Length: 470
Image 1 (cartoon, rainbow, N blue to C red):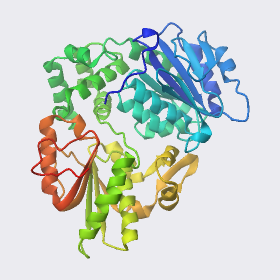
Image 2 (image 1 turned 90 degrees about the horizontal axis):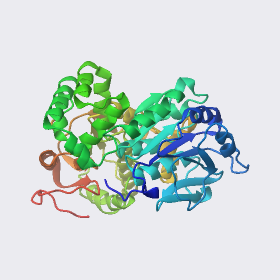
Image 3 (image 1 turned 90 degrees about the vertical axis):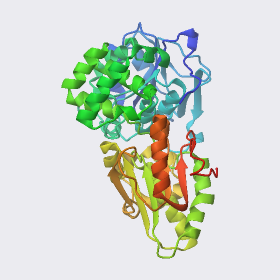
Image 4 (image 1 turned 60 degrees about the horizontal axis):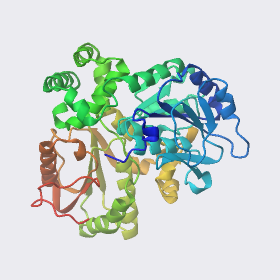
């Protein structure tokens, strides 16, 4: 994806935006962190903490005692500057907009206590790889969804070591969701950020990184990952590989490709980390509202109308990530089937190459940020609230879905499908792999059935196979 970047303040192309999330009980962690943060780097820091809207915050004053950096409460229309720490005021959400800080009243935002997610998603959108998201001590799950977005666009995500946190729920939530690049003690975090900022490859432009690679390097990495991890690098577009490989290099402190290849050969954990980093697992419930509107108004009613009385409705979600889309589609079908008063069996197959994502999907437990994505009536009907502000999808929905590990590019497809959903997966694949997957989908679908793609994806030259309806 490509967005106009907000990082153009003072024409400083090296400015890095660092967002730090903590709950009200995370003050000690914030103070310890800022005691060790250097003041001479082109970085702007944002502290997003859960603050009581009914009381004046002393956070700026307390942090300023621990750092030589300039600390102040964030105000709307302020131009972001390096060497500054901006603190969220009570009762507000904070975002970056048009190269400046923008504050939004909490009452204007749906959901509750999701200020960290809101800011993280904002910097992911505007700053891409030039941002860092950090979660410190805190209760609940705020920050998890936003960190996944930062990681997906190539930024860096860090979490305080849960064992050293007074309130470990927020770090644990992000770690369990696979949203964290590195878990570290507070005094290690500044060094990790500095390595990321100053690494000779990490924040270079795509064409500069590409020129630094040779086919020999990619071939060696591909061979190691295929032999040890059964991960096939040749299926993915090179740009995806370049950015993520150099990011892993910065996290290991390695600047030379050949040295990193040696590290991959001997370090099983690093091979696993790189493989997981190359899998982009970002999804939401009911992602892309207009697409779901078309699905609910045109596609699902048509499938239900044409189904035989005793015929099961069969759906395949290819690249299901952590399960949000599979559950969204299940809810859509359940709602429409109840409206039409039909009781055909609903068979949903959800597959992904990532073992960790499948494990999360099977549990069906998600952070409280989903209340910004899921209509309130669905939360009440299909979810159960768990401790620490988590929500679990009810068994009546989970039991409809079979989750399984599968490489859609190499493993045999399912058959007799009425709907295949494969959203935001093809955009990362090489053209020949895209065509191979589209061929497999065509043969897996029944007549008069549907293929649901992401908004940036097309059927390529397969116009003899598929007709676009929206």
